[in-house]
Image (cartoon, rainbow, N blue to C red; front, top):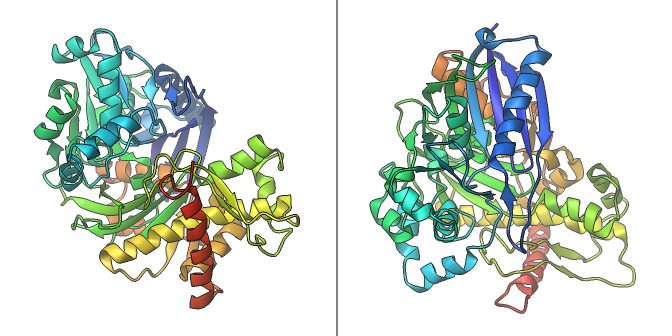
Length: 497
């Protein structure tokens, strides 16, 4: 039997999962790494620590099945997107901390871009809204605030990459500096229509082209690993985590959608070969591409706080001891009792894109209990998702048949039932919930011939449970109106902080 090693490099942990040719998990390992918050709004990682953790869990997963490099047909890599690493090509050492996608230090720089009229051009070429979420302003900040970095970059000594690029560099001993279209499309430097780095954008952000990786397909043999234990294994799949999950969920045709309930929430709708321009502040992004096939696109709604609101209930309020307790606490009341919790802890993402919005709780009375707060927290995840789906429908007029879901919070059946009630279509939880890692494995396996085509992969997808909607149109409209009034209180331009 052939095996694929999937390296799933997330925001808080590194995982390695070994899949067999049926798409089943055979072995896995996981290790968390440290989060750094040097100033309010700043979030950093140590790229060296990420590499050590990732290669460590890979060795652990292989040992769990007593496999060596000869048993592994290919490596697939999926990663937290937008996070920026800059390192010295001569030493392979990062010149400073990695700036994480959650980091907001460049919010003011993004405001200046909007004020000077650059936003329209940036969106037209990249499909992205101008926001500190994306890589370009983070990379610009590093070059401007790291002594000697600008000169070294212009001399060709520095390399930039998102985490996929950093891992491939390390896996190949510095021989390959590559990325794929899904990760490149998140940098705000990549023209998604031409499939290439854009010279005008590079000039706008003062980024030397010499820093940038070569961009290839999500499913192709990019290189061979040279590190001990994986020497000679093809690195054959690369994709940002949300596009990998879209692929792993079998959403490969226009009109299919998935939502990942993780730290944040990421809802992607496949739009095929058409890059749909959003008029409702969604992101047009590259979907995973296979070999020499045509470019694929998706609409994406990025929600900054989803599962993290449950962590706040645990760590900030102390009303639960573990995240797993939230469902029982929320189920202790029949509804939220009119309470709305808008978790704008780091601003609001799609479709609002308000970096200065702040978390707000409305509707509190003397009768409000911890159960109501827990229920309002869970419902906030579903409400934000429903808003994004509304925007997607307005952009392309699709009729969604079902919403496939994954991520850590997808184990919460109370949340998924409320989600189905709110959006009015079935919400489907798959049998294999590790869809991000599975997508990376599928992309790698296609490139090395484990699977013949995408249709064969789609036939492997199985549902574990389907949540059917129970509310009528009037009930859904009333609930969404209440939520939107609460969001208005949280907005920075409408009375928020």
